[in-house]
Image (cartoon, rainbow, N blue to C red; front, side):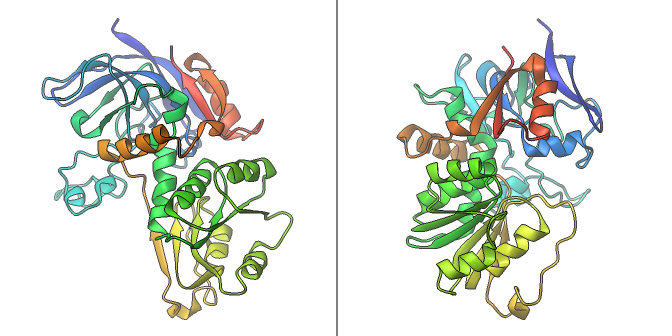
Length: 358
């Protein structure tokens, strides 16, 4: 077999299933047969033309699969082994990686710095919504899936879980902290779970969808607030006796949620921003305490690499977290266009869609 099916970006509003050649395997690569992947909100931005990628690129960046073929330099793995790879797949050779920021593994002296350079699948190289994906720098990025775990149990590890946990980590959550998490989509829900694991004693989850707030409680939220029913800022300040929260995590990417997260912070608190923003942000003078509140605003990009994936897989295998409730729908790769229509329009209570090529 020399050809495979792949979901290909053609133009804004058009991602279609096409036939493409199965990629050849270089010495540092691994060819992985995809058993399950999914659609991310970033893929919807690509579909809408809000994030530019090359015409003909295979989309997707969340792979679970089986090693089909290994490059000659790749050691410590075997063909037929179940693996995942992070959505961010750094080479660990760049200036950014060696400075401690492997997710920013991009750019060079001739072209300058490139933010998000570690995001290659479905961005700068062919991605995972296909029957096969070529994993670059495979020895740095492949992580074996522990025996007994299903694809659905580990499907969130490559991106959503890693990103949400990064938000909790960047918020500098300490044992006993009070944390507010704005938006309970898949990333916000993972941030909620991450805040619980970090030791927060009170987790306040905010969303406008009561079903998502129910899932947030399953994953560790102590208080849930529907912004359609209450003034969230006032309510959080009441809950904290006017003190404010130790950390706030913004997981949507809107001016309104960013501003609310800033307004509920205590002096010296941290705003951890995970949202992807499509317009300029404005920082209100009062919420920012004229720059004198000793607050931190920190952004994060999904950490990748095999060590990050190993740690996340360990958390899943330990039973400390169950993210399978986030997988609300399943589609065959043949029906990828219908899956995009469902996910992009957020119908039928969708959180994440499992895509099965075979």
